Figure 1 (cartoon, rainbow, N blue to C red):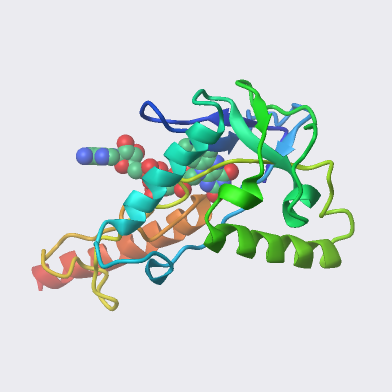
Figure 2: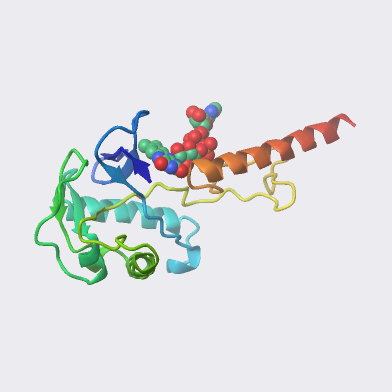
Amino acid sequence: MCPGGFVIPAATAPQQIVTNGMSPANRGTKWSNAGMVVQINPEDIEGNDLLRMMHFQEQLEKDTWQQGNMRQTAPAQRMADFVNKRLSYDLPASSYAPGLISSPLHFWLPDTITTRLQQAFKNFGKQAHGFLTNEAVMIATETRTSSPVRILRDRETFMHVRLQGLFPCGEGAGYAGGIVSAGIDGERCAEMASAYLSSLQQ
Ligand SMILES: Cc1cc2nc3c(=O)[nH]c(=O)nc-3n(C[C@H](O)[C@H](O)[C@H](O)COP(=O)(O)OP(=O)(O)OC[C@H]3O[C@@H](n4cnc5c(N)ncnc54)[C@H](O)[C@@H]3O)c2cc1C
């Protein structure tokens, strides 16, 4: 959740939409936004290609661009409409500067994402009154929460499975997806690296 922040375009190549959220230091704008993260496991994607999660991510970014009229206008849907599988006839104002276009996200996003989000929103709506509301707008898609490819490391030593002295760490190596998890993983890797270096000196 970014209180007082914006949803921003964060694509890194043509023909893709990637969104992200950020707040300026004073968190002073009238907006708030939250990234809703769906965990996707390798077994959710068909095939044996080791890079299939990366291809899935790339395809999702391209599909989102196509659904956004092949510009940076992002496809979006009101939250209750998404849960109830209805097209939104209009959209509320939003902080996303390139603009939004109404789109049936429930229809074209992969099932593995939509069904989990719909179920989660229903549960949140029961626990937190007012959470599940058509005043909230869902903007597709934030796809860069963590690396789709994991660099393998030993469970005990945190060292790369083949390269002695290399400690794959944090988001880029596939062990974190956000500030807190990256911070915790970084701390654990630093402790392991320190123990390894100490053992070399003995
Ligand atoms: C716009 C935006 C908003 C975000 N908002 C949130 C949020 O609200 N909440 C949240 O939890 N997370 C948020 N995130 C995600 C969060 O920033 C990352 O999950 C986190 O920073 C990952 O930490 P990390 O240490 O693994 O990687 P990074 O912070 O990316 O650090 C990697 C470092 O490695 C350096 N590096 C790369 N290649 C080399 C090289 N070859 N040699 C030497 N150095 C190199 C880079 O310069 C960088 O300093 C946001 C990210 C973005 C981009």
